[in-house]
Image 1 (cartoon, one colour):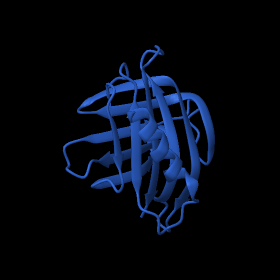
Image 2 (cartoon, rainbow, N blue to C red):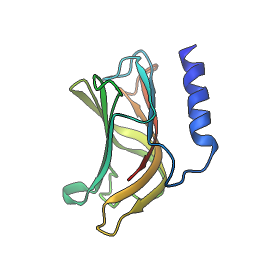
Image 3 (cartoon, rainbow, N blue to C red):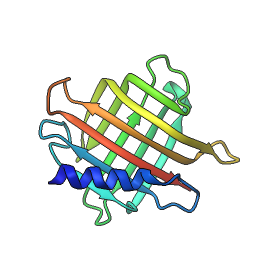
Image 4 (cartoon, rainbow, N blue to C red):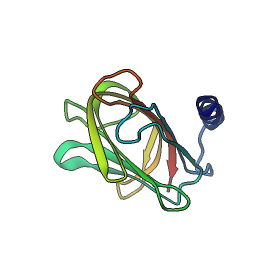
Length: 153
């Protein structure tokens, strides 16, 4: 049932193209063996707090952070390219992805992510970001974390 609800939420979230007026969201789901989220999910529309930041040094990573509306749960996702190049729009397969939840984190060196839209403000900071992420724990069955997000500032 939960998987069907998440699939419906992801479908609704991706049905219309994003605009600057869209609400921020972080929708995530995880399999029972996923670490560190362990089968939990969330649909934070909008999150109580959300940020997307690029870190040119040392590794051109992008950090995504979101908190639940009640402030009791948070997800941090960090995206990396193995070649160290800047992350732009596109599909990135078998790349490094970090997921942190409740103070615990796990790096997946074979994670996948899509950046469907990214824009920068006059100061060079990320002002718009749309994408999705897939992260696996130890490349085992039933260990996948999935997230879909939209961010506007």
